[in-house]
Length: 513
Image 1 (cartoon, rainbow, N blue to C red):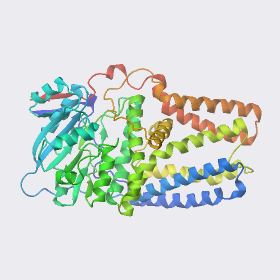
Image 2: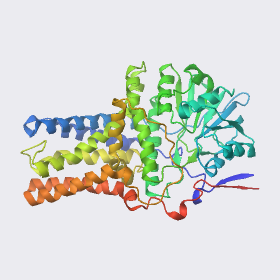
Image 3: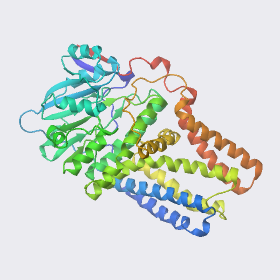
Image 4: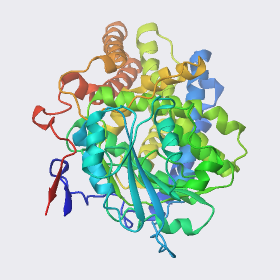
């Protein structure tokens, strides 16, 4: 019997982070060196107080630019340590005993079944598969019986996914635990490619990439996949060489004793994997990263699903920043965690940058004054272009414009998430929908539309009031933001995020003799 994972025609062996897919290090380091030089060039001009016009706006701009440089510096530090993936050493000794956990909560059976089938065919260990059903579904119980796998249903759904896994830990006994989200179908050699790292007794977990096999099915899915490829490509490889790769919730193998040493998964965080990793690293446990696609899953296919996913990630990571600051992690690990957590503050800078041309065109105030357009572009232009080029070169071209536009168009997610954290409004753990929805989705882009309208009005008002070179400069700046927002929000605005013919069986499988 062989499993053929169709994924609407995408072969199950498709992968983008293979061992050889690492950009040469010298172009990356050259790009970083140029970026550093141009950053110094731009800031040596920006911090000249003689350029300040409105001090409040100037101060806000300076803070935003400093934040971006901090994020950029962390990115440069991470990617310049990128290395090629080395295969795991062979497992020695008796075959390990492994429990495979597949948490579910009201997902469709057709999504879950391929994952179960593939999990039962994992090689290289004594494997027992368990379906962890927090949805109390009789259909899931029948599915587990049909494939002769374990079925664990708890009476109280406390702690969401983390609580579900912790409950299963108490009912199983394997030396190692693998967690797959229910839509992530593992390849048969998943354990062969990961278990060898546990020959080092200090290794707590081995993380592998999340790959979205449905990226050709919608604009949102493609952009989400590009974002994932950037993170699980150059960023994760760099984090791994810094000893700071954290658990990402699925496609991961744990040493049971490591989980028990910290009391299991934290149940008070929306990103239990991030919080768990801090606990493990703080206690001296190590992590490893395998830069090879060993499981294929599903990304969000519509804007609502994407926003739901990003909201949970943003709130969880922002809420974890105080824990990281209090931790006793080595400095390199603490900085890496802070870099990942503070990334979700970037929505504030996007909002500020969009607001500045509006302030100038409508109200006549701006952060920088008495400066010609040519002088500004001479200092800012090379710095901005080099920053984008560095990301493109380091990622090997993986990070696309659509990924950038989608991130920019949902800037409000970061702002709302920070508000929830600051005012201690605990969000609920929402499972990302596995089937996309056809039709327009205006609700998740209401803020985006409002800013697009504001930018358009500002352009009209500015041109009518003062058709000067300074106005044209700000009109161009506003127009650039308008284009980015429109590209990011377009799939939700026109309702073409998923073609109707593709709504069935997103993660289908054929079982053939």
